[in-house]
Length: 314
Image (cartoon, rainbow, N blue to C red; front, side, top):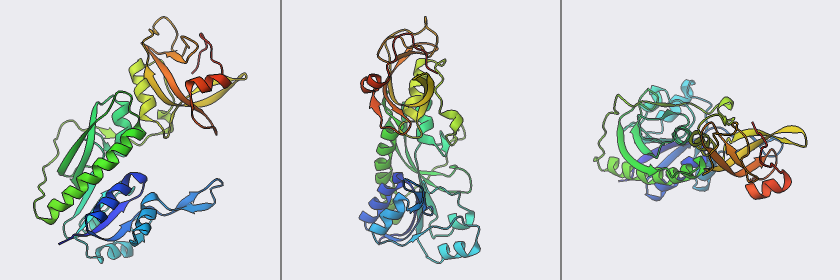
């Protein structure tokens, strides 16, 4: 017999899981998502979240309380009489009344190998730290921050040049498959859970503006990981002088360079092709984007903004 599921998610990352559960034949009795936000070119139009739109396409009721502090919202959730809540990047911390508001509890799809990278930005932080492996975990939620016992794990290799955007897409699909499998086992009474390890805990803090500027005084590997870990959003950036004025430029893609940057100051162009010296080693900037413009390959960028050997960027 299919499960009666409340699905809770907001961004595009969560949509694959919603669709997978629906395709598996479960009854999605309601979807909770963040409220529509101002968007469009002028910020005047209210934009539905990707999950909100996907749920409407599937003809599933959508609810979007600001939070669950209001007793009416809590009671409305519990009144759905669901078997289980499935949570994937919903964007709110859930009170115990909600976590315990279904027959079988709440299960979260989390994009890391817990207990490493608990918190808001596990995909970006894993790449920025130089991790070579991550994954998706289905976790039974408790009142802590990503501290609940784990039901299912799927590992994903992080390639040396893989960006956060690419890893995001891969994990979204893996997570959908994992959650569908976990719910099938839960329905059959065959889902077992194990407590997380007490050691190896790291927190993936939300990406702050202060995290985004590139520091070329760091080792080349760290600079490369920083750039790809923030690509495509929010984007690592540096300042490049254009027509005598500093201009912020996003660095969308890079690769480690064979050139040795130790004899040049960090941030110095070692050739005419955007190979930049770092504290140790060097990186090649592969794709860049000026504010309000489209992203360009290094070759196309240099046609409009020449940066000859010896130029220093910061």
